[in-house]
Length: 346
Image (cartoon, rainbow, N blue to C red; front, side, top):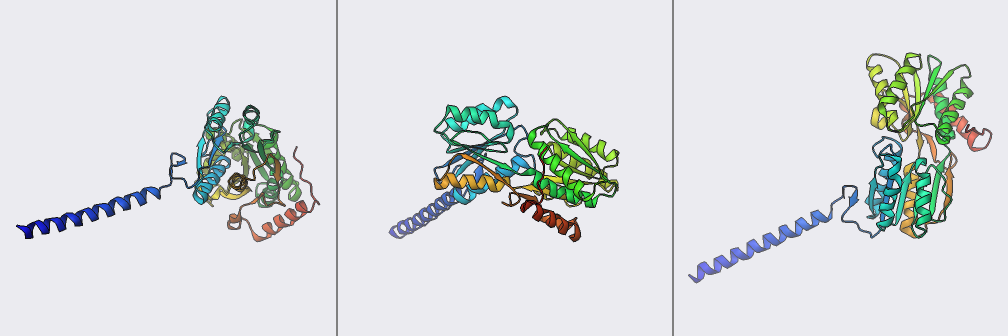
């Protein structure tokens, strides 16, 4: 009887050890968790950073997505908790910004020039809060504003388009008309003109940044007119430009799209993406995030140019752009950086 009792105690002890081990492992796996619903529940830092998008949404494949990926990278690298709110209309900008500000977030981003007035209003009403905006300048001591020389990067892809076109007809699709998007159009036009003054330049504004169907329709009209290369600066609307080009490629038509903000060949493929005008929104966002983490955040504004490596063309351009054309791009890049060429904005 004593022998059986001793054996039972040994078995019970072994089971207890096994259960303790399983419980310990489960906790380790839980603590290794990542982002859930846009926020890291196991953050290694007490800091929180929020981001409010314009109506283009966080999955626009370009501008907003670049900013969100930068926040996710900050979370992964530092443990800062991050979250975004997607605005479905202009009326949601202030409530969304206030959700982060009133929620005690250490930094609240407004992504896009359309949030300028909302950022200014919220910043003035909450002078102890810290906010940041991309693509517009807000004059407030608690706001960091980051803008870019879009016209310079657009000039370079204009050089690519002007030297690549076979039909001598080149198009541009913009989102809503604005001073900002005009910089893309004018820079691109001037780049085309610099290397191919005989090319016909056809601009078109879809009127929205969140309407792929309008982008598709605009692209269809241009391709029907004989345009073989379209540069878009239209957020999610540009997804429709790519979709139209992809459909025509499958039918054997030799048409191209030039992407914007990030390397869009990674999303839409090399078969249709000639090159992309890179605008390093992600690097700018990560840099300001670091200022919050380091305790060095200060209001003010900065403009990132070709000289700062803030704009440029995608590294993958070598897949579809010849070495001779890329050499010409480098030539014009140096002329812009050293001031020999001043790219207009309007």
